[in-house]
Length: 179
Image (cartoon, rainbow, N blue to C red; front, side, top):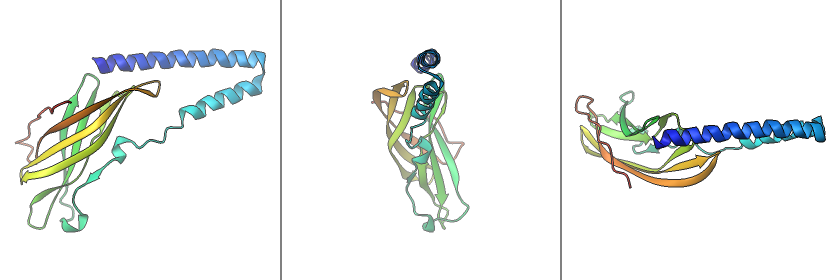
């Protein structure tokens, strides 16, 4: 519920900001002139487009070199880390088999799907270790940034750990711990 309230607060402040900008542009146009108001609007647009951060999908951890694996034997394990009212955070583990059909974690990343207005999930570290051919132990550490109009207000450390099963029939969701 907190995520929904935070998203609604961000949306309300954004609409209020846009309304102020429209009023300011109208006043600038009346008092100073059309050219100045156009420069003001273009300046606002460029300020909003200056975000060059990497997205979560760009942060992939690789565990196994590709030359030791059998080609075209890969599959994906998806583990639900957090399920709140408006968004879901996952751990996606790319698995491969070697020449002897042993399963290994090849890579992993942690995306968020849903309404993420006002929050930004930044995984800092993902580790996946093989327990046996059917199970992997994982832990994910990262920071959830709470933003208000693009400015970070609070950074919350989150930690998830658990067991990911390679066989979908044995899989069960284990909600992980929070610190």
